[in-house]
Structures are given as structure tokens and as C-alpha cells.
Image (cartoon, rainbow, N blue to C red; front, side, top):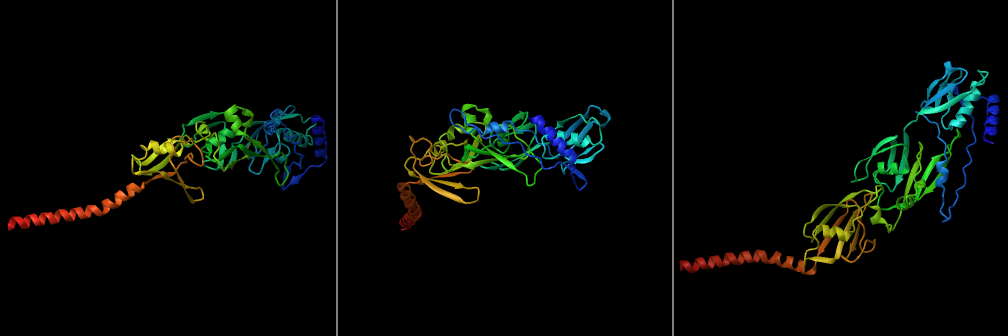
Length: 375
């Protein structure tokens, strides 16, 4: 069926050449039908299987190798220019950007057939362009990243890791510094361009479950990336139950810096493991000072990405596990303040008054002694 469609396409193209500004452009080709998402026995959406079968799409920066079997003198390498065109022998500039190799081969074969009796040829990619992907949402450093087959990546505070081979979703997230504490790993969206020279460009989306990859080792949730892919990590309002466990994987920042101040034994800036709970951070600062600390009034000040600040109050309970309500996992840049107890406040107030008074009493006593001596 595929061969029949290719032959029909070639026949139609031969009768209807297209020129755009002096460049032979492929006509609007029908994009491959996207297979519907299937479900496994557990009912999970397996749209990732569709991504694994995607074909490579030619784009600017690719270096192609054209081999004409009956005309070796016309064979050679072709570089796809910024406008998506390549210079074909005997034909001139031909736009191949946006086409798969199969579509481009059929189009070039049709054009060469206008000049050659037997335009049998092979078209292949000998040097692919760098893959540029966009990461948005809950990653440490959102933005556009260029990935190659040899990369050095590092999550925030983690060790530097060298990777080789075709880049995947995980590689891109690691290069962006890793995920934030609020990343929803169960609902990661990968947007990808559909092949074809249509304008506007069409896209498809697939949902990935990176938690399934991390906890179960399901590598189908970590597909290879194509140039132009966009990865979106949504925000989850509640810190996931697996937050502490996720802090140990190579998708998360490994360490965070927090400030612990107030009534603790050693206040100051601390470097802790990512997602360290509030109580553990207080203990890392030496713990609350005996009678001076108000264990029921611990403040957490957090600076958000938009520049705003939030203030929450918690009580220290050593038996409480990590939870948003009672013992929240900390983020990089958080400030924890252990406030004074009522007794400490009263004591400080008395000291503030009594210290100057005691000084005056000492001076008055000295003057009286001097007077007694002189008399």
C-alpha cells in the first residue's frame, strides 16, 4: 500500500511541478495518519508508542547524501540551507524542509525524472542538524536548548554527567537543571511537528508519565527527541507523596540552599538535600534553643518565581513526616525562622531595661563610697 501511494504521488508530482520564488517546492503532502493512542491492560494511555514510530523530518542544517545509481557524477552531499532548500544537479534549488526522507526521496526522484531516463536514487542523512527543543513549565531553567549526540548535563547541585547517543526527554530535562518540586511528572506533554510542507505547520501532542519511568523503569515514557519538540511540565498544587524519593533521582536538583534563623543553636545558611522537610532543616541548624524557641511558631518565607513572597507558620513536631500541611519539603532559597517563646521575649525585655539601670546603680554606689571616704 505504501509503495502504491508513493508511485501515485510521484506520478502526480511529475505532471504538476511547483515553483516558489525560483525554488522548486514540494506540494502540500498529506501527513502520515497519526495512529490513535492505545491502552495497555492497566488502562494507561500509551500515546508514547506513536512517538516512537515517528519519521525523521528534514530541516535547515541537515547534510544529505544523494546517490544516483546511473549517474554517479551527479551524486554528492547536499546541505539544507536556512530557507529549507538544497541545490540539486540539473534541477536547481529544491525545498525539502518539513518532509520525511521517504517523501523527499519521492519528490527528488520525480524532479530528476524530468532530466534522466532512469532516476533511481538514494537519499540519506549523513550529518543531522543539532536538535533544538523548548522546555517550559516546572523545570529549574526553562528555555530553548540545543542537544547533540554528545552532551554534558547537570541538575542543580548534582554531579556533572556525560551522555552520548540520540537525546531523549530525560536528557533535555537534565540539561534544563532538572524538575522543580511542583512538577507533575504524571502529566508531561510532548508537542511535535507533523511532517509535510503545509503552512501553518501542524503539530501533535502526546502525554508522558515520567513517574512510571522513574519508579517502574518504563523507558517507552522517555522517547527520542526531534528538532522543534516542545516539552511542557505542568504544575501540581500538592507536593506529591513521592517527593522525598524523587529527590534522589537524577531528574531533580540534588542540593538546595536555605536560611535557618532565629532561636536555633547555629543559625545561618545551610546546604541540604533537595526536598528536605522543614523539621529536618531546623535540626540541621542545631535544633531549637531550649526554653527560648517557640516550637509552635516557626515561619517559612518563600520567594516565588514571579517575585512575590509567601509566609506560612508551622509547629515543630519530630514525629511528623513530610507533608504540605505540617512539615513541608523545602525549596532552594527558602528562609526558616524559629521565633522566640513568650518567656524569651519577657527575659529580653527585662534585660533591655535592667542593664542600663544596673549600670546607674553601680555608678551611684561608687559615688557614695567616695563620699564616705572623704568624710
